[in-house]
Image (tube, rainbow, N blue to C red; front, side):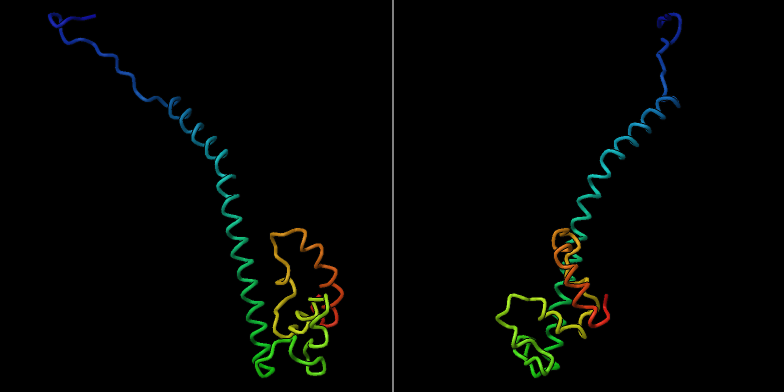
Length: 137
């Protein structure tokens, strides 16, 4: 080692090598691969909720359009002869009220929430059978 008398001292100059760069790059990529699915899973729930909110809005608008066509009466206040479900108002078959909205609803898939697997299985037989009457299925 040189001293000041002999000249400037040699300082160990270690640079950031290509191998170091590759190790850092691989580490960042692995961290991204491990974190990205968790981040995307959280966003999916938000998108599903927005879709369900939109479906509820369409159902509400469908009921409102029905009432505009029937003197501000909803299906459960309009007799069946006029296209309503008044005779079934106390029935447990709630789907009949939605069946009266067949002209206002775009598709019966709006009635089933896409995030709830159990409701889809319970509602699908009704949709397949009842809405074939209106050529939706």
